[in-house]
Image (cartoon, rainbow, N blue to C red; front, side):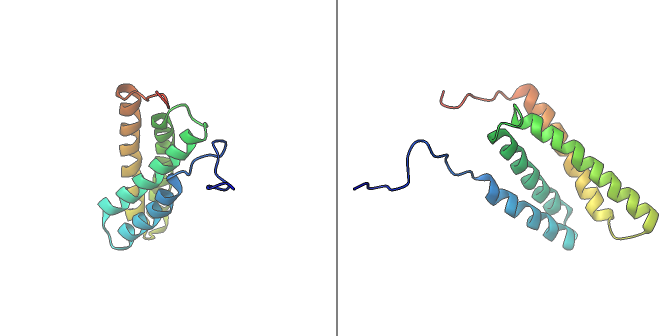
Length: 125
């Protein structure tokens, strides 16, 4: 009889990223709801950093830093679109737009800086 049924070396390990993805957006929305921009930016950083980690873990990008820099372009574009929509329709999107633009700039700086200065270690070495 096997003491650990269903566990073997051929199965993948559990990924920590889904938990952080699930926490990132609610934290960002709580920050936006109460007007706390640093909390909103932190939640978006957690969400986008987790997405970059998932992309690296599944082999879609060669480096987590490059994935983060790529996501930053999408976040800044979304923030600028919200900013433009707020200017044309006078809705309450300005706080969300500023949070997204700030997050995108921070992610771009982190992605470029990390790719230039941080060295990814090979797994198992």
